[in-house]
Every structure is written in C-alpha cells, then in structure tokens.
Image (cartoon, rainbow, N blue to C red; front, top):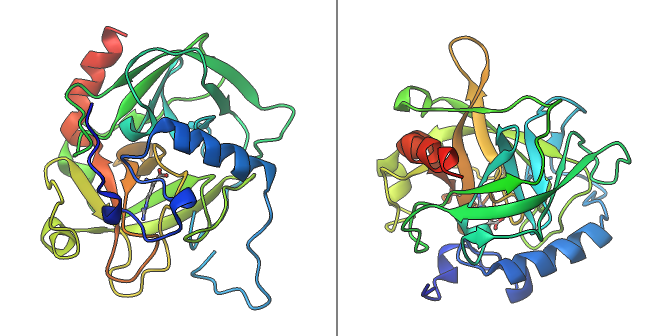
Length: 275
Ligand code: ARG
C-alpha cells in the first residue's frame, strides 16, 4: 500500500495529534493510549456551547447501544452481533488481527460493566487506497448478543437532513480523547457546496455534514470509524455515514467528511457474508 502524504487534507493540528485518514494504525493506537490515560475535561471558565465530539453533549447510557470503541483509537458500530463497521484508515492492512479490543455497551469506557471483546480479523474495503472507500469490517471473537445492531442505509433516501454523530474523540482540534461518549447533530451539506473547500471530495463515495457558516460542531480525531446516523421513516436509527476526515475540526467553511454508507451497502453486505 502506498500512502501519499496528504495530511493537509485533514488537519493543521500538531503532528502527534494528526490522525489523518491516511494515518497508520500505529499512530492511532499511540494516540489512543495517551487519550485514554488522560481524560481531562475540556471545560473552560466560560464554555462556548459550540466548542465542546466538538460542540456536543454527553450521550446517555443506552442511548446509542450500537456504538463501540476500538482500542486502535477509533469508533465503530455493530453491523451484526459479531461484525463492527468502522473506517479503513484505522488499520494498516486487512487480515487476521487478534490485537484489537472492542468496548461496547457503555458510554463510560472505564465502566466495569462494559463488554470487551477481542477481534479476530480486519477487512478493509476492497481496493482501499486512501481515497474514498473508507470503510472496514472487524470480526469479533464472539458475538455480542445483548446489544442491538445499527442498520445501514442501502439507498440514498436518507442521505439528507440532520444527522447524529457520536464518539469518544477530541472535543476540539488538538484536544484529547474522551472517557465518556459524546454526541451532536450536524446538517447535511450537499456535494456542490462541499466541493468548494474540498476539491478532492469523491461525491459518490463521501457525504459531508456540518455547519458551513459557523462551524462549531463536528467529529474530530479518534471519532473516525464511528457512525453518522439518523431516524428512518419507521423512526429507527439508520447509519448513513462513517466518520472519515476533515480539515481540522469544526472550522467554519470545512464540514466533516463521511463515507457514504448507502453507496457501499451492497459491498459491505457481501464482505460481511464471506467474513
Ligand atoms: N480522521 C479522523 C480520525 O482518525 C476523523 C476526523 C474527522 N474530522 C472532521 N473534521 N470531521 O479520527
């Protein structure tokens, strides 16, 4: 695999925090350890409600039961009881991998009641080369039977409106990973608008979300791989995106970029079946 240095696409934060979607899993793992050991809150004397995910609030226990944390410093969602959907850029390669711990069923990563399961293998999207196709599957050593899965969108019908994002990632650019799951809502940004700040956008494979004018709410480093989701017509959660990348976090004019799940739904289903 060749990974050209395109970090400028992602962020302007210091190198050791720079977890571009092309970042090696090694870098992510290192940052994850640092982040989890130091879970200092980002509170400032006069908190800006937009800058606090960035611009979010704590999720309630059980609110997003399909949400998982990968020990490589990424988020993910339960696609099936024993397969996690996450981002390809969280890993160096596909293949057997027993080194990832998946934490599920808890907003608090240190909750003694959290479910912890090891991985057995990783499958990055076929043809993944750092441009688009930023999804991957992680097979679990045993199924998590008591948590619901998150359905993925298989048409573009839900690729619009307002989305929920959630993760244990940084609460601001250059910030730290969080002990407690956070959530926020971001509006859809159409491809034409998103192309302006991001000429490299791959419109069929990526979907943008964020507040174009003000910024302030976004996913950020270590939210990668986590789901972006909304309610479907039956009022059930449905996943429309996978946290992928962005320039910095929550900057005005720079929405977050997400893998457009509907575009890959058939591939994901096929990959899971042979996994
Ligand atoms: N690539 C980042 C990660 O590894 C996710 C960045 C998302 N950035 C954004 N501005 N939405 O966690």
